[in-house]
Amino acid sequence: MSSRERRNLFLGLLFVSPWLIGFLLWTVYPLLASIYYSLTRYDIMRPPVFLGIKNYQELFTSDETFRIVIRNTLYWVSLSAPLGVVSAFLMATLLNARIIGRSVFRAIFFFPSIVPAFVTAMVWQYLLSTQYGAINATLQGLGLKTIPFLSSPQWVKPTLLVIHMWAQGSAMVIFLATLQDVPRSLYEAATVDGANAWHKFWYITIPMCSPVILFNLVMGFIGGFQYFTLPWLLTQGGPHRATEFYALYLYRNAFQWFRMGKAAALAWILFVIIVIFTAILFKSSARFVYYAGGEGEKR
Image 1: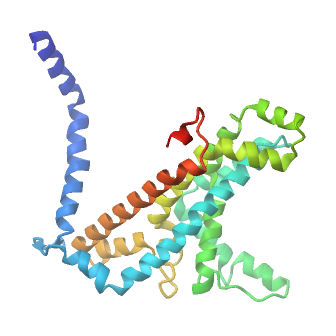
Image 2: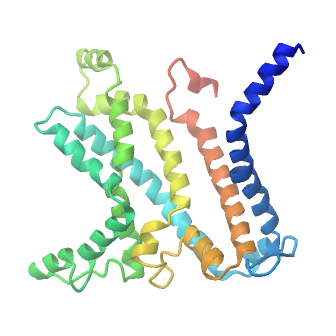
Image 3: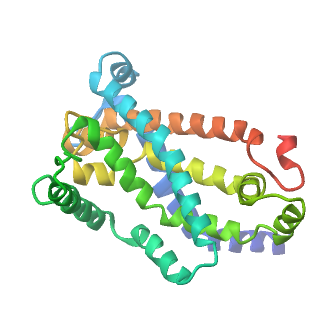
């Protein structure tokens, strides 16, 4: 290596050193530390005590709450991810049509995505309350019974699903951009062949948007496994642990009960679950995702 090359290498390393130092300090070290702490009993106040894999054994063999949390989270992920995609896709399809005030409607539907989660929780708590909520007041005005949306184990998860489907503005914008890139010539050719609106939607719109559907589905699954803010603010995991999701249980172990070792083990189990789900989705995507140039057939 010549002196010029060594100088260029030194300058390059010098310029990227802030990123390298930050990456090592804030990414690599926490990752390695969490692996170590997952093998210990650690409450912050005292030095960690090495336990081996006992935290993992406890979670899988004797922790009843962990089983409840897994059931709740799988229920949530299996419904929230596909329903969120369907909701966002239908909203985008409707708002892609040429209607009067389309820009205003797009802004209205996107608005829930930029509202802070705390504000969203307060608004829905007001709307859904059995004592002073606007929705239950309307039901009573119509002579119907009030519904315990947030205080009934049977109603609380469907209620959170509805709120989740309502706040799909970000995914909707991505779908909207994709819909506008679908070639008009395909629809014109289908019209010449006698296809109706449903045929165009099913055989052209959905296949052309399928890569973005996969993207939003993957993001929905990952977000679903880490669902925290709204159940924490609206229900605190209740009633009767019906909304005790994985992220809530991890948070309680780490910052309420100071079981950092167990919380780290929960975090790594969650990481493995997300990796497996994502790998399955990508592996099976060739069956339902259209890739331009036949990429889907190669997978």
